[in-house]
Image (cartoon, rainbow, N blue to C red):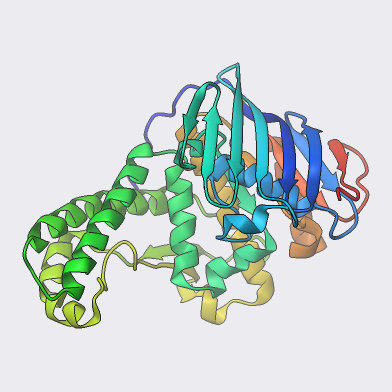
Length: 349
């Protein structure tokens, strides 16, 4: 395993408050949060998951429920607006995010941006939802998104190379569709350079994820990445004829896949539903550990519908870890008892 890089020195990073306007079923709402455990509770369809979705959008510039920003605008309205106050390096930072159906806008204190990319790394966050079973059972795109969002929150250079690769590949695909090779070497060289960085970053991430054994079964978890950037240029040259017929690039970081193994066997084919859920929980805690090491402060972690995602025994294992984490958000339809800051979500309409 490669040596872990030294962590950046941060005092703390946590979300202090969040204002929502015209976001999902919220006409207008204001929330304040505790520095440690926050339990968001209420009946179904009240807006608990939408609150986590707003937090995740502030953290990553993406929704975990849709790829279409217009879906986030409250029905009958023309825009949504979010404002978050984040304590970072003992300095309170204001983050504003809006979308009017066509134009994105981010304001970080006094600086305005027309893209959501500057949000990455502002509030390092790990999310666990029932949808995460798609990391095992879903398409390779889901697993690439997991890799990309994790790395983008701690490595701005990774974002640069990912953007650079896609731009160069788009130009190469245009040349392939036009059945011309003039200038294609230039774009392939750019793709290879960025693919090498992307592949190295993904491989280091996989090696640094400290996956525990499945507690109940004592089975070994492993991750395998299907990428070989060392031979990428030769592969591009070899595939030119076939790819010219199709008009697209078939091999590269945009096609890599991550395989999750339990005792050497693909979890997708051999794991039970309980094992899949436990595997995802283990993967998310490993992700939290690595992200926190990388940014030098406890990352925020969100659990959506914990009671519905795991059985009582597995919930108890997660509860044991809560005290070792940083700021935590849990949604549940059950009225909480005991520790934590309790946030009731009721009829935000």
